[in-house]
Image (cartoon, rainbow, N blue to C red; front, side):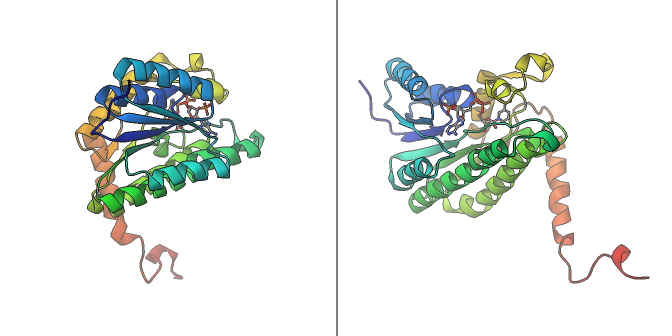
Length: 266
Ligand SMILES: NC(=O)c1ccc[n+]([C@@H]2O[C@H](COP(=O)([O-])OP(=O)(O)OC[C@H]3O[C@@H](n4cnc5c(N)ncnc54)[C@H](OP(=O)(O)O)[C@@H]3O)[C@@H](O)[C@H]2O)c1
């Protein structure tokens, strides 16, 4: 039998496997009711059964292909209108790998829909709901490749750079309205995304690969500590802070009425 949760409901996209499935497990154990979104209805239903039985929270399954406009609109509508939703885990994503010169550009377009368009529209819907109630939490799964285009294909890292930039802008806009927004930047994590993207996980050095449970537990610890950006693998927070300080110091220099002197005619 399901119990009523005073933590409200977490809607998790990409909950059928990997990072999203572990968020589902951890949030159910914390006492959140769940809405699970992904394409694979059977896997979602099996997870819902398992978590409902183990924790007693209510778990609803909403199958959707987030690259499909109609399906996406259905999830947006739920996020916008359901005052019981207190958390969005904006997680579903895919990786298209390989060089631009040989990539399947239609697959890249699908990735842009899933990694850029869908989380942007879902965030906007959740933001409207949360800001109106001056409460709510958004967890956004970006990637360390947002900072490191050298690591993987630029089409994938570009989606994550967009997402991080967008999330930071949401933090500025919505933080003062009472909405808590976290960006999570996992490094390589042991999930299906590698095989699905045509990069067998066995090819990765084990020292750079984190177990998915450890990754999500670290991300939730970062959320509990009030972090805006959580990089589970990064030992030296000072290194990241130095980069942020340098980035912010550039700000006042980036837009001026005159070009820099090196570009002016002698
Ligand atoms: N694993 C890593 O190394 C790593 C590192 C950094 C960031 N990330 C990010 O973490 C997020 C989760 O990925 P993961 O590593 O957990 O990979 P995963 O195990 O492949 O999970 C991806 C999830 O997204 C769902 N999904 C895929 N296409 C979808 C679509 N069209 N519509 C709706 N749902 C869809 C999948 O479910 P269905 O197939 O059932 O739809 C699955 O639940 C992604 O945003 C990824 O970019 C992963």
